[in-house]
Image (cartoon, rainbow, N blue to C red; front, top):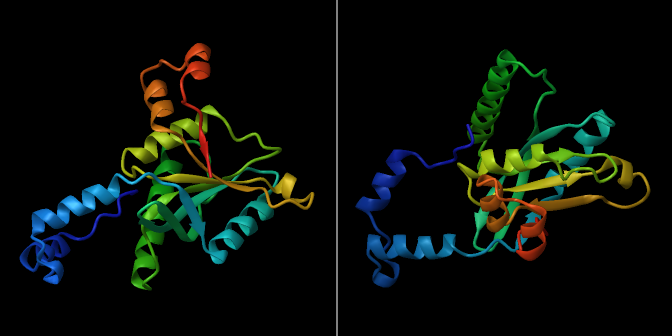
Length: 201
């Protein structure tokens, strides 16, 4: 349900009709795309609509913790978050997991029908008093990055925002951090010696 690949017909059309601009062949064009994909993500740009939706959802259910899907575009070194939608609060059981997956698919289908960006670029979640650096956050990143290489998490803290500060930040874990965690090699010694810390925007 996290996949946002174009339809097969679009792939066939691109291969049959390569762009004439610059005289590039299909292989050259694919090489360019690969190079662009290797550009490091440096900026997360958010539309006001997405920010307001996140704040509204998190504030309405505080102090309960909520989460939702981020939608947008991945363009070079910039990840654009143009829209989002909330996940329903559910219990931890298999039936609830299936309902949650069906809900996401239905929301993506509806957004696609009204020509709204429906490419998944990550997720957002609320936290209390800055307590968002958890094992659950890392595990969620691991699950997302199986399908979306350059995903981010937007964290919003209603408790801090009530003090007059917009406590909204974008978070992405570095590749070195993810590799060590995946191989069960994340120790205090390695954490201090190697640049494996989370990356904040």
